[in-house]
Image 1 (cartoon, rainbow, N blue to C red):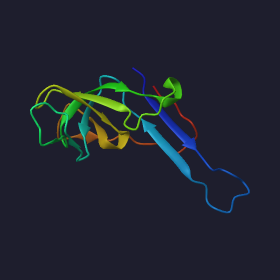
Image 2 (image 1 turned 135 degrees about the vertical axis):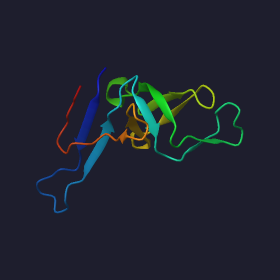
Image 3 (image 1 turned 180 degrees about the horizontal axis):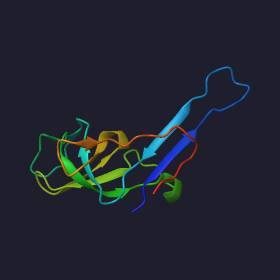
Amino acid sequence: MRRLLLLSLASLSSSSRVAPRASVRLCAFSVGDEVKVLSEATFFHVPKNKDGFVAKGLTGVVERVYQPEKEKLSPVHPVVVSFSEPTKWKAHFEFEELALASSDESNVRIPTVLASKEVETC
């Protein structure tokens, strides 16, 4: 399974008076990773939850990570996670809304970003 860490630096000019801005994009999840939801987003497509379901703290499995550079598309929420609670369902997330969950539920590991040019790690 590949883990991709992509950092792109934008607006870098030696003649610019303004400090350069770095646009950072993190893709630190692989298919099969167990992740924990950090955001308080409400999902209205979860079966048997007509009033919405807040998934914060729920643990699921990464099913797909869209990579716009390779697939020629730009999804808003590129990480697809499947859950088995309260029923079977899937949701799309941004990278910042998830954290890698270890086998110990009290210990959550959040991916870190390295400040450099384009970096690919496996």
